[in-house]
Length: 268
Figure 1 (tube, helix red, strand yellow):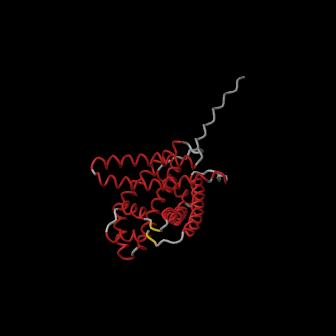
Figure 2 (tube, one colour):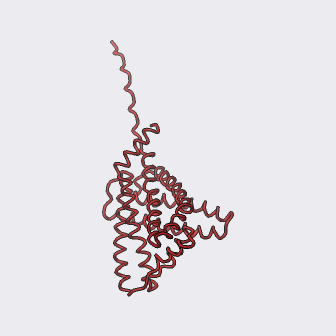
């Protein structure tokens, strides 16, 4: 199959799976569910709405300074309220996270052409949510350590992060597909999404940091909201579209039928 056929098949897969629409849907649900969940958990534990840890992590993640840093801290600092409000909010956001996990499970099943998962198997999508959240925090932490150490330490941490991305993505894809997809196909998906993550890391450290600063100057915390959603959208796009690309490129091809055997001459 030549490159034109591959592109045609990829276009058909995009149309059939509605991967672009699913990327937007998952990104929106992620933004709506996970950020409030972190805020509510912080409020429930500390008794205030001041999510300093989250704000600091995001500031270090994007290397924000000046107005952008102040806007990020202001966005995630809210006056405290009664503890009952936090527990109610925690319940609502947990429901949102469960809904997100189900959406993720259905999406990746569609990307890999798998049958719909049974209700008891939809917990697999929650594994994806937890792993992706953990990987984001890990990238922020290693970025901070590498920035302060510099030199070889930063390079070693970067290589370790990429390797960990690949291993974690392979593992979470295996969980999502319940072992129904061949390992070489999952390895291809892990490799493609890891390369995409490197691109997102470079993009977020160059363009996005500057964009957040400009939007914070013009719009304050609302501008930061736009920037955060853009980051989530691009990251989810890499994971969803990278998986679809791997699924198309590694799809088993039908073998051409063997030519019929020549007829044997009849013996008198």
